[in-house]
Length: 151
Image (cartoon, rainbow, N blue to C red):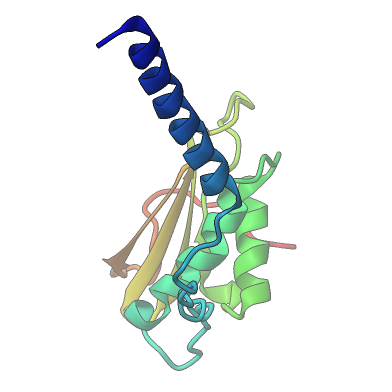
């Protein structure tokens, strides 16, 4: 192969490569996009339901509130639950601050529904965890001193 033939071959490869690139940029897809389906419906409160029936809704309400930076996360969590339909009289919450006025490592809120409790925990770094637990024989959900909900 002569130098001239080699140069012509290289030029042809380069022009085909670059030409293909420009076609790719302006090309339209052959397939039509397929719909991804409808969005999943938002969870709803089931007033006559048990803790299991309402856990997804409980998590939906609290996970949004728990990630927001707030001075009183416990109060915000209680207010969100009450606004969502849970009875304030069934809710317990721990303190936002320690006895030395330092933000608590976590705030726990619980809602008693029949013999079970929906328990949600917001950590100081704004993570959220939840579970369903059996109600205590005392009638509450949380062990120890809880905050008075007087607002």
